[in-house]
Length: 262
Image (tube, one colour):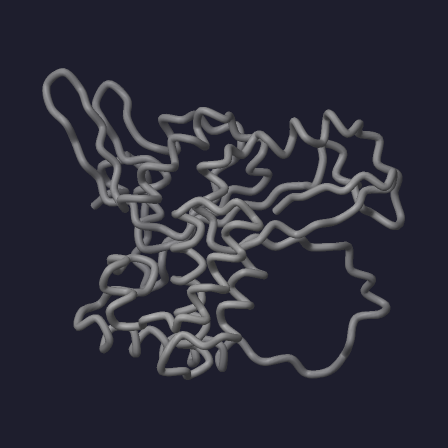
C-alpha cells in the first residue's frame, strides 16, 4: 500500500484518510520524492482529505507544487532511472488567519499589522492556487453567549443528502465519477445552461475578472448544489450560491481599509 511504500504505520479502517501535516513540513514530505521516491502526504490523502492548517505558513514553493496533483489527481516523480507515478486525488482544505497577527477585522482585538504586511501575507497563496479552491469562506469570531440554541440539522441527515447527490451523479455519468472530476464537455452535455444563465455568468466573469478555470468551477459547484437540492438541472439559485461561495469575502480591518481573504 501507499503507507507501506512511505515507510509509515497504518491501521486498517473503513474511513477515508485524513492528513494534516505541520506547516514546517518539507516539499518532499508533502508531494513525495527522495533518493528512492516515496509517496508524500498528497498520496497518503488519496480519496480522503488533506488539511493544511495555517496554509499561509507553508513555503510558497511547496504550495505551488500542489497545483499539478489537484488538477490531475496524481503525482509523477522523475529520477534518472525511472519515473514513478502515485495516485493523489484528494479534497484540499486550507485554513489561515486574515493577517500575520490574526486580529484583522476583529471587534475585540486591535490589529498591529500594516496594510503592506497584510497584503504580503495574503499573497503567499498564489493566484493559480487560489483558482483551484472551489469554496472560499471568511469566518468571524463567535460569541458563545449569543449562539442560538435551536436544533441544527444533524450530521447523519446531511450525510444522507450527500450520498443521494452522489448517486445521482453516478447515474448521470454512467460511472463512479462526480461533478468535480467529470470532463467539462460531459458536464455541459448532461446539464446545459440556459441562455439567461450563460449571460449571468458572463457578466460576473467580466466584472470579477474570472479565469476560465474559475468559471468552470462555478458551474461544477452549481451542479453539485442543485444535486443536493434535488434539482434535475442547474437552477438559477444554485448559480447565485456558487458565485457567493467561490468569491473571496470582502471585509474591513480596524483601520477601514478594505481587504479580501479566504
